Image (cartoon, rainbow, N blue to C red; front, side):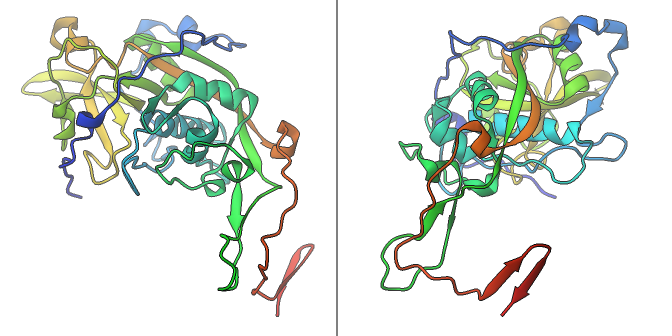
Length: 328
């Protein structure tokens, strides 16, 4: 499928995002990078294709239905979803977590930028609902009510001017048991292979806007962070007679961009170990979290009152019985 660069040039609108100075990692088990040996690192690893199986959730687009600087929420929601799917060995039901809920309720950021570690803290204490609880709207609601946590809308007669939307009471949220930060090529590889994709901050450039395919390399000594992505693997490709190592990276600019929404960028091994100047600083600030389990929202303190929209009526005629459905 043909790819396209972006006319809008998202990097032009990127906001400088800063890490949380008060962040405290939550670590309970041995870190993979502490036991991994350099000689044990495999030449390639890609969670899109492990023995023919793709463990990744669908690629997202932060710029529709409107432009929103929600890369931080897109990257973390994807990483948490992917890691849950990996933990479950791809078994149904998969996870595809709500980005809009993170924008509205995590206090990790807005459409003007944010940070991954605060999302992981939110997931540890409150969990994150599935996408169908609060679909991506690309806006800052400015509030976090029961409706921003999980809602559904009922049909309403024409004379009713209200939306007919009410909070959902019975749903589940994915929690995490551990989260932390890491940096550096070997530590990243050990963590990715052992537990799944990670979030990383980069300095997105105008060159990345124009990316279509291949291995990206652009010299830049400005490590000012303005974008967040997820790294899902790595590999090696022969370029002009030289084996070039690269990261496999998922962006949040839609599948029409790059290599089906992904791009490849050189690791720090590039140009005799100076690759950090050519890969947008991708190995400098990364984060991870370990999904634990889906928990009933009520058990996490979410228990909205039962509300019925004024003048709304049910038109389905359906009667629900345990183990059966009868439609009138």
